[in-house]
Image 1 (tube, rainbow, N blue to C red):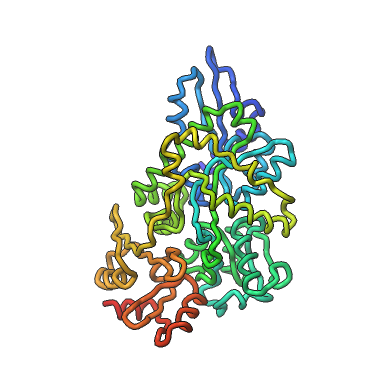
Image 2: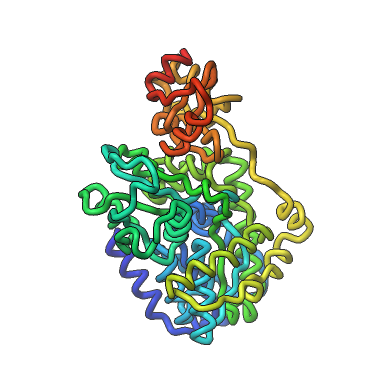
Length: 447
């Protein structure tokens, strides 16, 4: 099956340019092939990729256009945004989804090569930056960013995770170019390097940090939400395709909105669908895409996200990955506004759900929400054999994390979870009598 998929992907890349978003004669009518590039395992793009594909909403929207054409969708799956950009600038992908930093590179390359692209919608976002995390090996003695000085750190240069690493090091007083040995690696390679000990830390985007933590192969060192800068993934489209096929692009954005509503209305089922399609554990997918997950899904192009994109340009320029990028001309909300009509203003004003503690019982199609992490621990302590996964929000940033992987602090009667040890220690230092406790000790206190 894998060989067949590879062969199909290769065949798609060899199609003539006119077949991408163009007509091909098919009997008395015409067939239009729309090529969509996505990242199945970058799970906060699922509403424009993995989940959307599994639900078939885009194909249904295309079939309802009623323009006498037959539409086919060619889905192409990639590990990162870079190859999607390469195929878009070659005219071989019409619509793609990727993270904020790759989006800027997409904009720069498109303009440079005479095939301009535009950001037309958002998939998943986190207003504080919690989608990116720096992790270390489970037995590592590193406890803060300052410990990274002189160490080997794996990341994917030009990715949002690299941006988080650069900014975090700068705030810690470490030169991101000279203060560490940066290893430019794909996420899977970086994960292997961390396991082998050839990398001391790994800075990556969703879902790698959560996956490695869940598997017991890593522990969090730095929560990207500490930067308090928005990060997001979005949908980009070739300008020539959008102008030639505006109805097709609008159909895609309508379908994306449908997939977004499905994810928000059925978070557990959506997580299970994505898990089945990607091979990722459903518990990890839910950490990011759940009802109170790290990512919030909404196609609206919120001003906070556009503003953050402008700030990201500086990081890419300093790394010599792009020159100036005209973000205002790159962002084009006309298609999503038309696709969503009167609901767009409502989506634009929507805010992320409040942070909450959740338990996903084994085999259940629903989760249980608790008012506090302490209440969750009490429930877990009384139902240890029936817990599939337990999630708690960081007491400082609100970033959701696995309860058994969190750093716990006892402060009187309160039990507070933190993603990273440094933030937990900062709380202890500021609150006399508070102390770091193990997960087991926290469970004992709550029971």
